[in-house]
Length: 551
Image 1 (cartoon, rainbow, N blue to C red):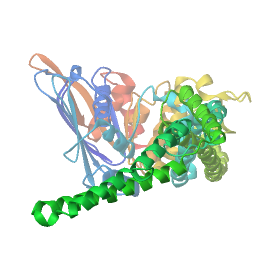
Image 2 (tube, helix red, strand yellow):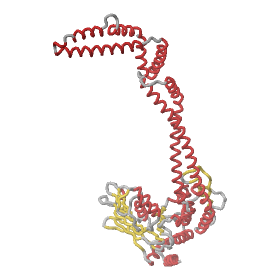
Image 3 (cartoon, one colour):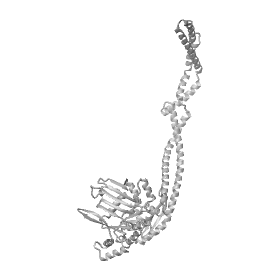
Image 4 (tube, rainbow, N blue to C red):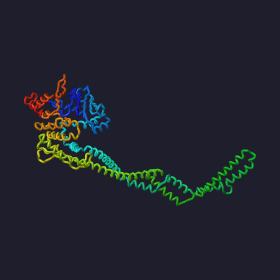
């Protein structure tokens, strides 16, 4: 529950501290006294944005602090763990707003982002303000009501997780299909290019080697003639060079005993003879291997011609470039096959995740439907109690596409006059009717939502008399289970207070400031009497007020 609210330097509040209690806490006061300012301050510690315009004194910072006494639960544990916050049964939320408009937020003295404060506020307070009755016509609110009654929280968490997986796969599938669509347009052309290269089936440096071989074959006769001539000169004919060297070597040997240097020269000539004979042998082998082959020349020319066409087509000038292109095209084609396989696998996964999500959603829907009759019956009973005997509400649930919220579209329908003409609540209900409807609904779901504090800011708009009295009865009953804080102008509601707070203005030097005080029994009677009969209530009004409070 909200145990303490501290406000400093906010709007027309210099400094204010309110200690709230369990049960029904009623706040009253004259119009303009500052009751709505209290709600504005409370909104700030619940995550609403603010600027420097809220400062009473522009030279000082604004501080708003709320102390909440909360029992530990799984959701809060998870929240505190995920945000690395220290748990305490007393949670202190503080906002500080400086003169330059900068704002800082704290949870248990730990600085946090405003978004974290908003997330926490959901677990602390349900704040219903004057114009929030329109919320009742929103599908989100209506769905949350049924889910609270059906205790769908756990299943909804599973659905959101499962549907999240489904949505992720679905988005990935969309991307892959777009890629496939683009690839399809290029597939035939890429396949043609690949087949063309694959048919030629080039080997490493093949075209360059063929160019060399072609030159050899085209010059085969000349090469053979030259090689044969050199061979004959070296080791054939009438006076081969090798034979001449042998003769010279023989002459040197005849005189080598006469000079030490001649023996060395003799050996060198011998080495030359061996080298020349070896050269002659290799020349002869090459000469024998070189043959003019017209058929081979044609084969080479045909293959080079095909290769040169591909050079020109692809703007390259090397065999390696064509082989690289072939490999690249092969990768693309394999990628297309892999893409097709990936799409098939994702489609199977998507279908599986959809079925799993649908199964959970169907269970949620079944639970929602099971609570409708009982819920409608109780709401209609409460409508009679709050002065709307001819009003009826019913719930319409229709099938819809699967979302993270389920497979239902939910619509709360309303008939104010037993006409059997039900229409959406937001279209036909008046402000007063909406207020009483909202109170009736929230009184039924408050426990299920496990909210420690429920706050109503002028939910009594558009009602008075017996209807207001019954609203007070409902609120008091509700306040036995949760803390309820309400701002009201209705004496019938104020009379039901367990704790009555009176907001007033007080002149301080040259400024007007908002103050608040807790009323004792006599002061409460007088406050209710003034709400009944004006600033100076009659004895009758006072007696009526006393009776209203005691009954």
